[in-house]
Image 1 (cartoon, chains in turn blue, cyan):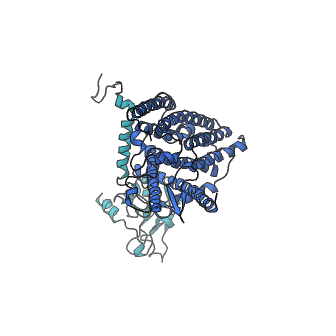
Image 2 (image 1 turned 90 degrees about the vertical axis):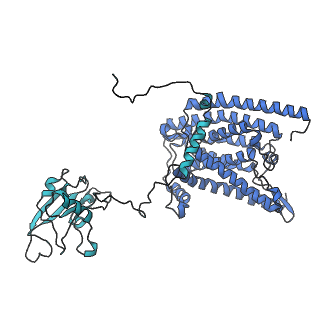
Image 3 (image 1 turned 180 degrees about the horizontal axis):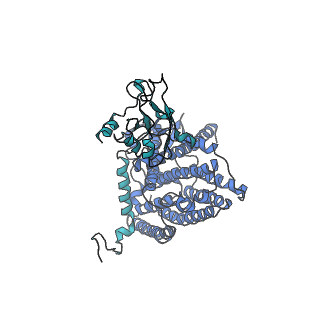
Length: 349
Length: 179
């Protein structure tokens, strides 16, 4: 690897890391504002103009709080839990293509940290490690509510990962690749996958809610019956890590939804504007972030609209409805692809 | 026996397919919350914006002075008798020669205390007062951490002598005189 490549990669990695942290930080602010607006309130407006410094104040508060590790807790695991949650949340952003490419001094730099050819599998792998963060934290707390929350979290995430993976299979069959960049590039202009895979998109969206532990699937931390769920015993910045990881996950899930179903950095008429290559790429990235922000807003919108599922309803929905639907989606896609291939004898891509 | 016509028969009919899908209902819910997003907010940003009280609001008590700055209260004790919460206590004293500018009549209250934790802000003290000395104003009683701080003495109750710092009770005075 050349020096220029290396420098670009280092800057880009730091940039992606910083951006995802800042977005997660301001998601907490947005969450409170959105919640307030949906409830006819104003929301935080005291710290700075429009309360824009509220996340900083919250951060300072988190750091200043007393650090408590329960006497009967397993100390090492207790610390390991939130660390894993935070680590896995930050790791997923590696395979997401944030833009097409930039040409600096006649050299092309791809706006992606690494284009693994099994990108989606990597995401699924990392996300499933994220369950361990919650599991270990809930187990190490030595508290029945934490343990119940952790149990719920792990069974929920495992069962929804199945449906999620299956909803992706139909997409992979269409595009013939697991690399997220290639999937994005297979939907130029407005040929977004959501128009050909509406059912797959719906399933993926529902499963994404469950994977990020957001309402209506926030049973692992449901405060009305389990105190705080898996993070009942946590305080200070360890609690902050858990909450923060949730917001990073939300950001990453939105980014993945956008990449898989909404064309990533593609946008109708973007390439026919006659702009220079770099400008088009940057505009594409900006539009991609616009789409991501819409989905983050959508996550919050749903949270402040729909009540929580009961646990048996959650399991019934996952195993008896979502998984059969995902299988049906695969079959339909396969049949359509087969006929298309047979009748017109054209390439699938 | 049927007493009213308001009872409703519970219908446990099977849900239709659209209802069982949940998605139409969820979309409806999303639409409702989205409408609220643009509604006028009900919050009042308190220290900057203050809500208008009604003219009959009963808040912090004031012990009035007359036009010449003399205390109206003569420590007759009618307010303390009228008080249903027994929040008012007072000690009466005789006006000495030379104190004519401080107290309107020969008798005055040397100690006048209202226990704000007992007070229910009913306004009966104001009704009982024959000298138009005590009134409830639209000022809010502040919260505090210590119980001791809620026993308000004359330092907190008597209005200042200076003409521009007097407490305006004209609204309540009108209602008081009508009764």
